[in-house]
Image 1 (tube, rainbow over the protein chains, first blue to last red):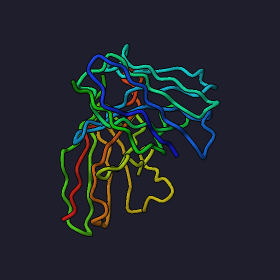
Image 2 (cartoon, each protein chain N blue to C red):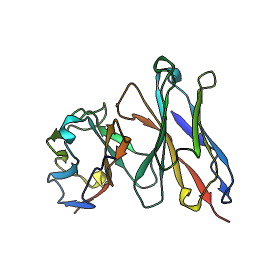
Image 3 (spheres, rainbow over the protein chains, first blue to last red):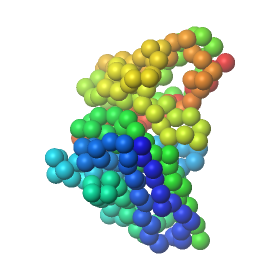
Image 4 (tube, one colour):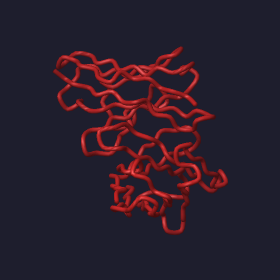
Length: 119
Length: 107
């Protein structure tokens, strides 16, 4: 399973780090992604980090490139999303998900963690 | 960028077949995944790579993909199928792309 944590109320311009802790599978075999969903709206993919055999290469959505940083620690079975210069538009539920290989579906998702950006 | 277009809502009578479309430029050349999301829950994949059902997903769920349209079909619709459904593709220029989502109502 995947469990997100770190969501909180934060002021605009501040930073926040989310964690996605995995259990029950070999974390290092999987690509990990972060997504978000504004309440009542659709899903948005944010960032992807590939597994070590794929060089742990990273992709970002244009909407967060330069502000958000994805990383992973396979020794701890955790994926991170470092968010900086947060804006009110970043208010959403943030999910992590796993996929294996290129272009494959996300078969396990976390339950989500709420990030609220407000003064 | 690459855009996926879904109807905002689809209604289906109990026991009938619901069809949800996902339009995209030459989407037939891509692998399409479909997710079901119920209120307050994380998304769950119901169809992967156009036509494949994960274990545990009823045979009532099926998918197809050709030309500019991918389709998710739910036969024998049940009240428990009510949810938001999202299509998703990997695009080499835009990375992961979701459709806007379709709210399925079972009447």
